[in-house]
Image (tube, rainbow, N blue to C red; front, side, top):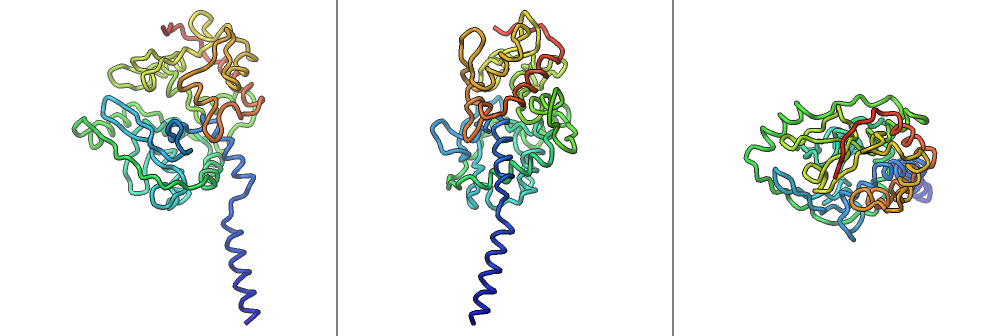
Length: 292
């Protein structure tokens, strides 16, 4: 009996150890989560982290951010790792339902497998929150069945993820800006008619009319008159890490939220990564585009 009990305990211990997340992987996932701006879209103001509920208005109707805590009933606790990665990168739920591109899967599809697996490990480590998701309210007939698929085929970015995330230099900065930080989702001009990004003017800014949540997004190309060409690399690093601009102003709105993050944000990134971003922003083509 004692041997059987001991064997049972050992099997139970081994199973728990086998499925327990590697602490280093969780820490790495939290870092990538922060480099993505802390995925603040999934946290309501003063709400529980990752529990969803934040409201987004669009020309197609209203959507609400979903619960991405590991709650098995209302969150993603019942999803496999691969299903979570598919949702992040391809915008598909386990049941095949399409996720609206309010979620920036068109940028996240450029993330390396290793980083996505680490993010999944971190998401599973966050305390589960039982909070039912609020159903979306689509007001445009046939939007999801006809118009959205056509838009995705015509306009959605199709990135090729690197085999491994670059670790330093301009290549690292490009990866953090384009894929992880999804900066182009806010800072690249969009067509007022189709809301498609104009990558010929990458990171040249958006007025309130086409900016995220009705907020303007400044030109962050190195144009000296309308962008951040007069900023030094150190000033860019300071801004991303603290929100403090060279002119003494402080980041607000969505940028302020991304810097502060929820469970982590840009402020938690290493100086080396912030410098890589600054070097990349200094290296991209300057685009003259004044944002009032």
